[in-house]
Image (tube, rainbow, N blue to C red; front, side, top):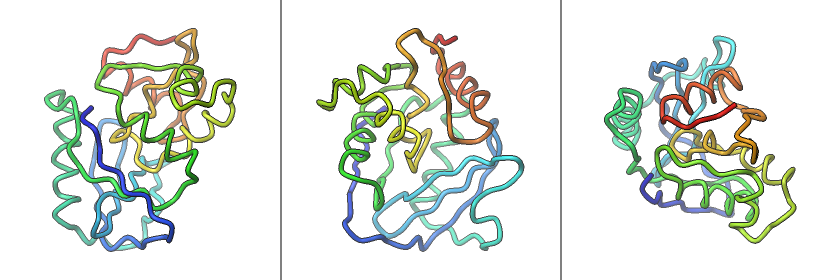
Length: 175
């Protein structure tokens, strides 16, 4: 994955654009502000978080939809999108920034991720930060596995089956 520009903000920013699209793992819902993508949600049990709000697209969301379609068709191994991380602690943002450096097909363990950000032995906190990633797929939190290669969980979509599909799509071995 190409490096994704992330812009932390100390004050919450409201989304001014919303777009939904179909994917092989269920419907996706993206939000953005003027600075970039704020969130990507994967349908869970037939529902999206902002289901009742009408869509209002934007150029960045149309570009994201195009790149996601290419990713799912297997022709795009990296994203070139502005991501605007308006929520999350400094620790969470450091985890997400490290995740953003992983390329298509790369994998990292929770322990190695903790070591990479200087937080050795923080497995639970690392797992919590990975699970709180507001833009899964674009920032590839599905690429984090236990050191044994086992899937230990996934908070988006249908959980482990969604993560397994993404890993298989990228040719990442897992258990």
